Image 1 (cartoon, rainbow, N blue to C red):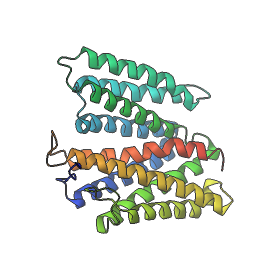
Image 2: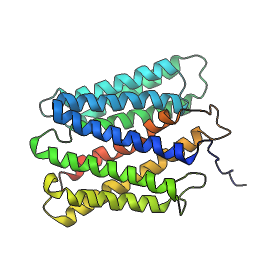
Image 3: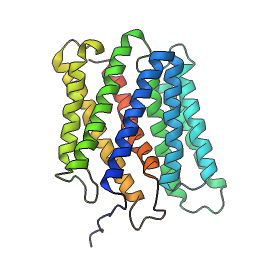
Image 4: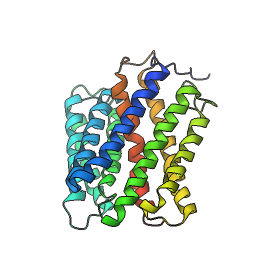
Length: 278
């Protein structure tokens, strides 16, 4: 027997346009606030994105224990950010302690609630949330030094442009379809890779990458990862809005927060790693 194809109750227009708009807003916030307020602005931008994701994730994922899950997620976001802001020489590996304690807090929160329906699924959703929050915290290390500010700007613009372009193409022509029932196509993924490469190439002087080929590879990798994770986020949106979903009728804007935050989270540690080798 084959599984039935998911049928989303969300029109393609509402699947793509709010997500593209929030991507543009998130990238603008991550670029403008640090330019105006320095490290404080970067912290504010990342924290707003993290807390928005916590609320959207708890609403959409169906994790049980609403208030407790919000508290665990918000505390993990703040702890992860402080762990990278307060030390004089922060390291990304320092987040392991935050993730470990956060997971223990999630287990305790789930075990204390009554009744314990969907315990395993709720723990899995919370663990995924903690990982994404930690990945978003990596944005605090991008551009923290004067030498890295240009590279951070190029990375954010490349990812943002790739995501917006992918949504625009998939709104018009989601073909060949990459997953049944999900309005995302191979053409949109290819365009995301190309747009990321073009943005990185055009901004190579700002980003400090002299070699044009290295800049193209840098942007293409970021665009490709952003496009693939955006596909996974779209699949989540389709499941959440399916006609037979447990709690259908989620707001497109709540869903768009997840569609914007997940690709940015996936690209943040990658951009941080790539800027040390290119």
